Length: 419
Image (cartoon, rainbow, N blue to C red; front, top):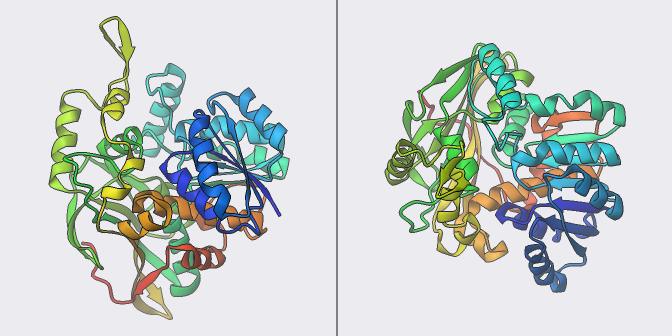
Protein backbone atom coordinates (compact mmCIF):
# COMPACT_ATOMS: atom_id res chain seq x y z
CA UNK A 1 0.00 0.00 0.00
CA UNK A 2 1.68 3.25 -1.10
CA UNK A 3 1.01 6.70 -2.46
CA UNK A 4 3.39 8.03 -5.10
CA UNK A 5 3.66 11.50 -6.61
CA UNK A 6 5.06 11.51 -10.15
CA UNK A 7 6.31 14.88 -11.37
CA UNK A 8 6.39 14.96 -15.17
CA UNK A 9 4.12 13.69 -17.91
CA UNK A 10 6.38 13.44 -20.96
CA UNK A 11 7.41 10.32 -22.88
CA UNK A 12 9.48 8.70 -20.11
CA UNK A 13 7.02 9.64 -17.37
CA UNK A 14 4.14 8.19 -19.38
CA UNK A 15 5.93 4.83 -19.59
CA UNK A 16 6.85 4.84 -15.89
CA UNK A 17 3.29 5.69 -14.88
CA UNK A 18 1.80 2.95 -17.05
CA UNK A 19 4.25 0.41 -15.61
CA UNK A 20 3.42 1.55 -12.06
CA UNK A 21 -0.23 0.88 -12.86
CA UNK A 22 0.68 -2.70 -13.76
CA UNK A 23 1.82 -3.21 -10.14
CA UNK A 24 -1.28 -1.90 -8.37
CA UNK A 25 -0.68 -3.93 -5.22
CA UNK A 26 2.36 -1.70 -4.52
CA UNK A 27 1.43 1.50 -6.37
CA UNK A 28 -2.04 1.73 -4.86
CA UNK A 29 -2.39 5.50 -5.36
CA UNK A 30 -0.68 7.73 -7.90
CA UNK A 31 -0.80 11.49 -8.45
CA UNK A 32 0.49 12.74 -11.82
CA UNK A 33 1.63 16.36 -11.74
CA UNK A 34 3.14 18.62 -14.38
CA UNK A 35 3.01 22.18 -15.65
CA UNK A 36 0.37 21.12 -18.20
CA UNK A 37 -2.41 19.43 -16.23
CA UNK A 38 -4.37 18.50 -19.37
CA UNK A 39 -1.64 15.99 -20.31
CA UNK A 40 -1.92 14.40 -16.85
CA UNK A 41 -5.71 14.28 -17.15
CA UNK A 42 -5.56 12.58 -20.55
CA UNK A 43 -3.18 9.87 -19.29
CA UNK A 44 -5.24 9.33 -16.13
CA UNK A 45 -8.40 8.95 -18.22
CA UNK A 46 -6.68 6.41 -20.48
CA UNK A 47 -5.46 4.31 -17.55
CA UNK A 48 -8.50 4.46 -15.26
CA UNK A 49 -10.40 1.57 -16.95
CA UNK A 50 -7.41 -0.82 -16.97
CA UNK A 51 -5.79 -0.41 -13.55
CA UNK A 52 -6.73 -0.77 -9.90
CA UNK A 53 -4.34 2.07 -9.02
CA UNK A 54 -6.24 5.18 -7.90
CA UNK A 55 -5.01 8.05 -10.09
CA UNK A 56 -5.35 11.77 -9.44
CA UNK A 57 -3.73 14.72 -11.22
CA UNK A 58 -2.37 18.15 -10.33
CA UNK A 59 -0.77 21.20 -11.88
CA UNK A 60 2.66 22.25 -10.57
CA UNK A 61 5.57 24.41 -11.62
CA UNK A 62 8.53 22.21 -10.67
CA UNK A 63 10.86 25.23 -10.71
CA UNK A 64 8.95 26.65 -7.73
CA UNK A 65 9.84 25.07 -4.37
CA UNK A 66 6.83 26.55 -2.55
CA UNK A 67 4.40 25.14 -5.14
CA UNK A 68 6.07 21.74 -4.83
CA UNK A 69 5.89 21.83 -1.03
CA UNK A 70 2.20 22.73 -1.13
CA UNK A 71 1.45 19.85 -3.50
CA UNK A 72 3.47 17.30 -1.53
CA UNK A 73 1.87 18.33 1.75
CA UNK A 74 -1.64 18.20 0.31
CA UNK A 75 -1.15 14.75 -1.29
CA UNK A 76 1.04 13.10 1.37
CA UNK A 77 3.06 10.67 -0.80
CA UNK A 78 5.47 8.00 0.39
CA UNK A 79 7.76 8.76 -2.55
CA UNK A 80 8.28 11.51 -5.11
CA UNK A 81 9.34 10.26 -8.54
CA UNK A 82 11.01 13.14 -10.40
CA UNK A 83 10.61 12.37 -14.11
CA UNK A 84 10.62 16.01 -15.17
CA UNK A 85 13.74 17.81 -16.45
CA UNK A 86 17.17 17.56 -14.78
CA UNK A 87 17.01 21.34 -14.38
CA UNK A 88 14.46 20.74 -11.63
CA UNK A 89 16.26 18.10 -9.56
CA UNK A 90 17.38 20.49 -6.83
CA UNK A 91 14.04 22.26 -6.34
CA UNK A 92 12.27 18.90 -6.02
CA UNK A 93 14.93 17.60 -3.60
CA UNK A 94 14.47 20.76 -1.51
CA UNK A 95 10.71 20.21 -1.42
CA UNK A 96 11.12 16.55 -0.42
CA UNK A 97 13.42 17.54 2.45
CA UNK A 98 10.95 20.18 3.62
CA UNK A 99 8.12 17.61 3.60
CA UNK A 100 10.02 14.54 4.86
CA UNK A 101 9.49 12.42 1.73
CA UNK A 102 11.83 10.03 -0.14
CA UNK A 103 13.03 11.13 -3.59
CA UNK A 104 14.17 9.57 -6.87
CA UNK A 105 15.04 10.76 -10.39
CA UNK A 106 16.34 9.45 -13.72
CA UNK A 107 19.09 11.96 -14.62
CA UNK A 108 21.50 14.11 -12.65
CA UNK A 109 21.23 17.84 -12.20
CA UNK A 110 22.31 20.35 -14.79
CA UNK A 111 21.48 24.07 -14.93
CA UNK A 112 19.13 25.54 -17.48
CA UNK A 113 21.10 28.80 -17.55
CA UNK A 114 24.77 27.96 -18.04
CA UNK A 115 25.63 31.68 -18.10
CA UNK A 116 24.51 32.26 -14.50
CA UNK A 117 27.59 33.84 -12.84
CA UNK A 118 27.19 32.03 -9.50
CA UNK A 119 26.83 28.62 -11.17
CA UNK A 120 29.58 29.44 -13.66
CA UNK A 121 32.13 30.12 -10.93
CA UNK A 122 31.44 26.77 -9.25
CA UNK A 123 31.46 24.99 -12.62
CA UNK A 124 34.81 26.46 -13.69
CA UNK A 125 36.36 25.49 -10.35
CA UNK A 126 35.07 21.92 -10.82
CA UNK A 127 36.46 21.77 -14.37
CA UNK A 128 39.89 22.74 -13.10
CA UNK A 129 39.85 20.37 -10.12
CA UNK A 130 38.16 17.34 -11.69
CA UNK A 131 39.32 17.55 -15.30
CA UNK A 132 36.06 17.29 -17.28
CA UNK A 133 33.91 20.09 -18.67
CA UNK A 134 30.41 18.63 -19.19
CA UNK A 135 27.65 20.78 -17.72
CA UNK A 136 26.09 17.86 -15.84
CA UNK A 137 27.65 16.17 -12.81
CA UNK A 138 26.64 14.66 -9.48
CA UNK A 139 28.34 17.18 -7.19
CA UNK A 140 25.23 19.34 -6.77
CA UNK A 141 23.09 16.40 -5.64
CA UNK A 142 25.81 14.64 -3.65
CA UNK A 143 25.99 17.86 -1.61
CA UNK A 144 22.54 16.90 -0.22
CA UNK A 145 23.83 13.65 1.30
CA UNK A 146 24.12 14.90 4.90
CA UNK A 147 20.72 16.63 4.74
CA UNK A 148 18.98 13.43 3.63
CA UNK A 149 20.88 11.37 6.22
CA UNK A 150 19.86 13.71 9.04
CA UNK A 151 16.24 13.66 7.82
CA UNK A 152 16.23 9.84 7.66
CA UNK A 153 15.29 10.00 3.96
CA UNK A 154 16.53 8.19 0.85
CA UNK A 155 17.35 9.96 -2.42
CA UNK A 156 17.96 7.65 -5.38
CA UNK A 157 19.71 9.34 -8.30
CA UNK A 158 19.71 8.44 -11.98
CA UNK A 159 17.45 5.39 -12.06
CA UNK A 160 16.89 5.15 -15.82
CA UNK A 161 18.83 2.81 -18.09
CA UNK A 162 22.04 4.74 -18.58
CA UNK A 163 22.48 5.98 -15.94
CA UNK A 164 20.69 3.38 -13.83
CA UNK A 165 20.55 -0.15 -15.17
CA UNK A 166 24.13 0.11 -16.44
CA UNK A 167 25.26 0.77 -12.85
CA UNK A 168 23.20 -2.17 -11.59
CA UNK A 169 24.95 -4.30 -14.23
CA UNK A 170 28.28 -3.15 -12.78
CA UNK A 171 27.21 -3.97 -9.22
CA UNK A 172 25.97 -7.37 -10.40
CA UNK A 173 29.25 -8.13 -12.19
CA UNK A 174 31.26 -7.15 -9.12
CA UNK A 175 29.05 -9.25 -6.85
CA UNK A 176 28.69 -12.40 -8.94
CA UNK A 177 31.11 -12.52 -11.88
CA UNK A 178 34.47 -11.05 -10.85
CA UNK A 179 36.96 -10.91 -8.03
CA UNK A 180 38.56 -7.85 -9.64
CA UNK A 181 37.30 -5.67 -12.51
CA UNK A 182 39.90 -3.98 -14.71
CA UNK A 183 37.82 -2.24 -17.37
CA UNK A 184 34.18 -1.29 -17.97
CA UNK A 185 32.86 -0.27 -21.39
CA UNK A 186 29.23 0.90 -21.45
CA UNK A 187 27.71 0.57 -24.92
CA UNK A 188 24.43 2.28 -25.89
CA UNK A 189 23.14 1.28 -29.33
CA UNK A 190 19.91 2.56 -30.83
CA UNK A 191 19.29 0.65 -34.06
CA UNK A 192 15.88 2.27 -34.54
CA UNK A 193 14.76 4.27 -37.58
CA UNK A 194 12.02 6.92 -37.19
CA UNK A 195 12.10 8.13 -40.80
CA UNK A 196 12.94 11.77 -40.05
CA UNK A 197 16.05 13.41 -41.47
CA UNK A 198 16.85 14.62 -37.93
CA UNK A 199 15.17 14.06 -34.59
CA UNK A 200 16.23 13.22 -31.04
CA UNK A 201 14.91 10.24 -29.08
CA UNK A 202 14.59 12.16 -25.82
CA UNK A 203 14.38 15.84 -24.83
CA UNK A 204 16.25 17.61 -27.68
CA UNK A 205 17.76 20.26 -25.42
CA UNK A 206 19.26 17.68 -23.05
CA UNK A 207 20.21 15.28 -25.84
CA UNK A 208 22.07 17.83 -27.95
CA UNK A 209 23.91 19.31 -24.97
CA UNK A 210 25.10 15.84 -24.01
CA UNK A 211 26.24 14.81 -27.48
CA UNK A 212 27.99 18.07 -28.37
CA UNK A 213 30.01 18.20 -25.12
CA UNK A 214 33.66 17.07 -25.10
CA UNK A 215 34.03 13.33 -24.61
CA UNK A 216 35.72 12.00 -21.49
CA UNK A 217 36.54 8.76 -19.75
CA UNK A 218 38.18 7.69 -16.52
CA UNK A 219 41.59 6.01 -16.51
CA UNK A 220 43.51 5.09 -13.36
CA UNK A 221 41.25 7.29 -11.28
CA UNK A 222 41.66 10.42 -13.42
CA UNK A 223 39.54 12.03 -16.12
CA UNK A 224 40.80 12.09 -19.70
CA UNK A 225 38.96 14.60 -21.90
CA UNK A 226 38.92 14.52 -25.70
CA UNK A 227 37.17 16.63 -28.38
CA UNK A 228 33.52 15.77 -29.02
CA UNK A 229 33.05 12.73 -31.30
CA UNK A 230 36.81 12.33 -31.78
CA UNK A 231 36.96 8.65 -30.71
CA UNK A 232 35.00 6.32 -32.96
CA UNK A 233 34.68 2.53 -32.83
CA UNK A 234 32.59 -0.06 -34.65
CA UNK A 235 30.74 -2.86 -32.88
CA UNK A 236 28.51 -5.73 -33.97
CA UNK A 237 25.51 -5.58 -31.65
CA UNK A 238 23.33 -8.62 -30.99
CA UNK A 239 20.03 -8.37 -32.95
CA UNK A 240 21.02 -4.95 -34.34
CA UNK A 241 24.23 -5.49 -36.33
CA UNK A 242 27.34 -3.44 -37.09
CA UNK A 243 27.13 0.17 -35.91
CA UNK A 244 29.43 3.17 -35.53
CA UNK A 245 29.73 4.35 -31.95
CA UNK A 246 31.45 7.35 -30.37
CA UNK A 247 32.95 7.98 -26.95
CA UNK A 248 30.89 10.44 -24.86
CA UNK A 249 31.02 11.85 -21.39
CA UNK A 250 28.24 10.25 -19.34
CA UNK A 251 27.23 10.70 -15.73
CA UNK A 252 27.53 7.12 -14.54
CA UNK A 253 31.28 7.18 -15.22
CA UNK A 254 31.58 9.69 -12.37
CA UNK A 255 29.70 7.61 -9.81
CA UNK A 256 31.25 4.30 -10.93
CA UNK A 257 34.71 5.85 -10.58
CA UNK A 258 33.79 6.82 -7.01
CA UNK A 259 32.23 3.49 -6.03
CA UNK A 260 34.62 1.18 -7.92
CA UNK A 261 37.94 3.00 -7.44
CA UNK A 262 40.07 -0.02 -8.38
CA UNK A 263 38.70 -0.24 -11.94
CA UNK A 264 41.48 0.93 -14.25
CA UNK A 265 39.34 2.35 -17.07
CA UNK A 266 35.65 3.27 -17.53
CA UNK A 267 34.30 4.42 -20.91
CA UNK A 268 30.89 5.14 -22.45
CA UNK A 269 30.04 4.75 -26.16
CA UNK A 270 26.84 5.64 -28.02
CA UNK A 271 25.90 4.86 -31.62
CA UNK A 272 25.04 7.58 -34.14
CA UNK A 273 24.22 7.57 -37.83
CA UNK A 274 26.07 9.87 -40.20
CA UNK A 275 22.94 11.91 -40.98
CA UNK A 276 22.44 12.72 -37.28
CA UNK A 277 26.05 13.82 -36.88
CA UNK A 278 26.00 15.96 -40.04
CA UNK A 279 22.86 17.77 -38.90
CA UNK A 280 24.20 18.27 -35.38
CA UNK A 281 27.54 19.68 -36.57
CA UNK A 282 25.77 22.08 -38.91
CA UNK A 283 23.42 23.27 -36.15
CA UNK A 284 26.36 23.72 -33.78
CA UNK A 285 28.35 25.67 -36.40
CA UNK A 286 25.53 28.19 -36.89
CA UNK A 287 24.94 28.61 -33.15
CA UNK A 288 21.65 26.72 -32.79
CA UNK A 289 22.97 24.62 -29.89
CA UNK A 290 23.83 27.69 -27.83
CA UNK A 291 22.21 28.18 -24.41
CA UNK A 292 23.01 31.90 -24.40
CA UNK A 293 19.94 34.10 -25.04
CA UNK A 294 19.93 36.32 -28.12
CA UNK A 295 17.71 39.24 -29.07
CA UNK A 296 15.55 38.61 -32.14
CA UNK A 297 13.12 41.33 -33.27
CA UNK A 298 13.00 42.72 -29.76
CA UNK A 299 12.36 39.36 -28.13
CA UNK A 300 14.87 37.30 -26.15
CA UNK A 301 15.16 33.68 -27.24
CA UNK A 302 17.52 30.81 -26.37
CA UNK A 303 18.67 29.18 -29.65
CA UNK A 304 18.60 25.57 -28.42
CA UNK A 305 15.12 26.06 -26.95
CA UNK A 306 13.91 27.47 -30.27
CA UNK A 307 15.43 24.46 -32.04
CA UNK A 308 13.63 22.16 -29.60
CA UNK A 309 10.31 23.76 -30.65
CA UNK A 310 11.10 23.02 -34.32
CA UNK A 311 12.10 19.37 -33.87
CA UNK A 312 9.64 16.46 -33.60
CA UNK A 313 8.44 15.75 -30.06
CA UNK A 314 10.25 12.55 -28.94
CA UNK A 315 6.94 11.30 -27.53
CA UNK A 316 5.55 11.35 -31.10
CA UNK A 317 8.20 8.98 -32.49
CA UNK A 318 6.63 5.77 -31.17
CA UNK A 319 4.40 4.82 -34.12
CA UNK A 320 7.17 5.67 -36.64
CA UNK A 321 10.15 3.93 -35.07
CA UNK A 322 11.24 0.45 -36.12
CA UNK A 323 14.24 -1.59 -35.00
CA UNK A 324 15.87 -2.38 -31.66
CA UNK A 325 18.09 -0.95 -28.96
CA UNK A 326 20.97 -2.80 -27.31
CA UNK A 327 22.43 -1.31 -24.12
CA UNK A 328 24.87 -2.98 -21.76
CA UNK A 329 28.31 -3.27 -20.20
CA UNK A 330 31.43 -5.21 -21.19
CA UNK A 331 33.85 -6.08 -18.41
CA UNK A 332 37.38 -7.43 -18.22
CA UNK A 333 38.96 -8.65 -15.00
CA UNK A 334 39.74 -11.78 -13.05
CA UNK A 335 37.82 -14.59 -11.34
CA UNK A 336 39.56 -17.24 -9.23
CA UNK A 337 42.92 -15.96 -10.41
CA UNK A 338 42.09 -16.29 -14.13
CA UNK A 339 41.41 -13.58 -16.75
CA UNK A 340 37.73 -13.18 -17.58
CA UNK A 341 35.46 -11.19 -19.91
CA UNK A 342 31.72 -10.72 -19.49
CA UNK A 343 28.96 -8.78 -21.29
CA UNK A 344 25.52 -8.14 -19.81
CA UNK A 345 22.96 -6.25 -21.87
CA UNK A 346 19.33 -5.77 -22.85
CA UNK A 347 17.77 -5.77 -26.32
CA UNK A 348 14.52 -3.83 -26.65
CA UNK A 349 12.20 -3.67 -29.68
CA UNK A 350 10.74 -0.26 -30.58
CA UNK A 351 7.55 -1.69 -32.08
CA UNK A 352 6.90 -4.01 -29.14
CA UNK A 353 7.21 -1.02 -26.80
CA UNK A 354 4.72 0.92 -28.87
CA UNK A 355 2.24 -1.97 -28.77
CA UNK A 356 2.46 -2.14 -24.99
CA UNK A 357 2.63 1.48 -23.84
CA UNK A 358 2.53 3.67 -26.95
CA UNK A 359 6.18 4.76 -26.81
CA UNK A 360 9.45 4.11 -28.61
CA UNK A 361 12.14 2.05 -26.87
CA UNK A 362 14.21 5.02 -25.64
CA UNK A 363 11.38 6.19 -23.39
CA UNK A 364 10.60 2.58 -22.46
CA UNK A 365 14.16 1.75 -21.43
CA UNK A 366 14.17 4.76 -19.10
CA UNK A 367 10.61 4.53 -17.80
CA UNK A 368 10.67 0.85 -16.82
CA UNK A 369 13.81 1.18 -14.62
CA UNK A 370 12.25 4.25 -12.97
CA UNK A 371 9.26 2.13 -11.96
CA UNK A 372 11.50 -0.75 -10.83
CA UNK A 373 13.64 1.62 -8.74
CA UNK A 374 10.52 3.02 -7.11
CA UNK A 375 9.39 -0.56 -6.48
CA UNK A 376 12.67 -1.27 -4.70
CA UNK A 377 12.21 1.79 -2.48
CA UNK A 378 8.54 1.22 -1.68
CA UNK A 379 9.08 -2.44 -0.75
CA UNK A 380 11.97 -1.53 1.57
CA UNK A 381 14.70 -3.23 -0.46
CA UNK A 382 16.50 0.00 -1.35
CA UNK A 383 16.18 2.32 1.63
CA UNK A 384 18.93 3.90 3.68
CA UNK A 385 19.26 7.53 4.72
CA UNK A 386 21.34 9.60 2.32
CA UNK A 387 21.86 10.25 -1.39
CA UNK A 388 22.80 7.25 -3.54
CA UNK A 389 23.27 6.04 -7.08
CA UNK A 390 21.97 2.68 -8.27
CA UNK A 391 25.23 0.70 -7.92
CA UNK A 392 25.25 1.35 -4.17
CA UNK A 393 22.25 -0.96 -3.67
CA UNK A 394 21.78 -4.72 -4.06
CA UNK A 395 21.37 -5.26 -7.81
CA UNK A 396 19.69 -8.67 -7.62
CA UNK A 397 16.05 -7.75 -6.87
CA UNK A 398 16.23 -4.78 -9.26
CA UNK A 399 17.47 -6.88 -12.18
CA UNK A 400 14.87 -9.53 -11.34
CA UNK A 401 12.19 -6.82 -11.54
CA UNK A 402 13.54 -5.62 -14.90
CA UNK A 403 13.42 -9.21 -16.18
CA UNK A 404 9.78 -9.44 -15.10
CA UNK A 405 8.53 -6.05 -16.27
CA UNK A 406 9.96 -5.76 -19.77
CA UNK A 407 13.76 -5.38 -19.85
CA UNK A 408 15.22 -8.89 -19.48
CA UNK A 409 18.99 -9.26 -19.36
CA UNK A 410 21.15 -11.21 -21.81
CA UNK A 411 24.70 -12.43 -21.17
CA UNK A 412 27.77 -13.20 -23.26
CA UNK A 413 30.79 -14.74 -21.57
CA UNK A 414 33.12 -14.38 -24.55
CA UNK A 415 32.26 -10.98 -26.05
CA UNK A 416 34.24 -9.07 -28.63
CA UNK A 417 36.11 -6.33 -26.77
CA UNK A 418 36.35 -2.64 -27.69
CA UNK A 419 39.92 -1.63 -28.42
